[in-house]
Length: 79
Image 1 (spheres, rainbow, N blue to C red):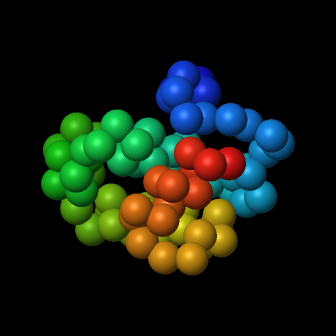
Image 2 (cartoon, rainbow, N blue to C red):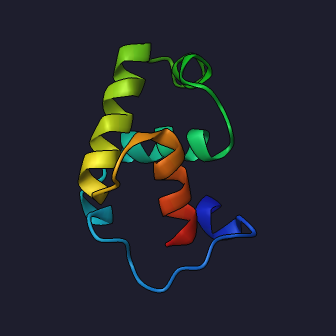
Image 3 (cartoon, rainbow, N blue to C red):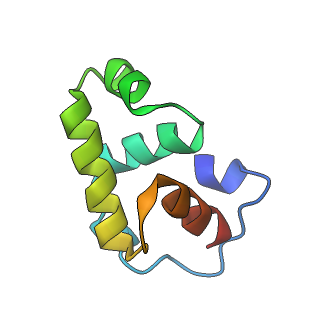
């Protein structure tokens, strides 16, 4: 729901790999899209920074995004 409310969001169809992303990973992604840094995400979700970084890497791998957080955010917003 949060992604759909973003002004640049246009969903054509479900992203390949989206169904494999866990609830916890989606929470991290939502906060990333709100512009929060890794340490802030960790604090807000009461998890370690290492867990945040692992979740980011898992999301990137599952969605098949080329590299990096910026690429991930651009990929999600474009798709």
